[in-house]
Image 1: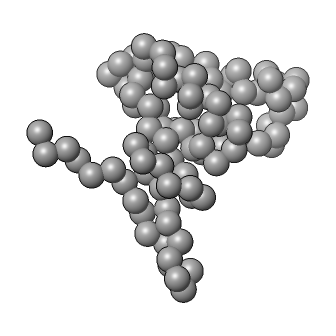
Image 2: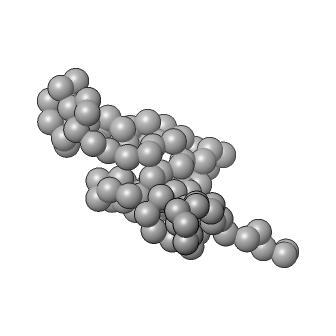
Length: 93
C-alpha cells in the first residue's frame, strides 16, 4: 500500500526521482496474484498508479480522500463534515 509520495524521506534516496523509483520497485516485485493499493491524491502517486495499471503485474486499486475513484475506493465528505467511504459495487456475475 502506498498512500502518497512526499519529500519526507528524500535524504535517503538523493532526490525525488530516486525516492519515487525506490517506492515503485516495491510494487514491481508483485505478481498477478498480488494487489497494489495506491493513493492517487498527489501527482507522483497518480503517475505510479497509471504505470503499474498497464503492466502485467498486480491488480492495482486506487484510493483517494479527495476525489471519487470509479474503480477504487474514495472518501466523500458529506454536509456536516462527515465522511463516507465509497467503493465500487461488486458485479452480479
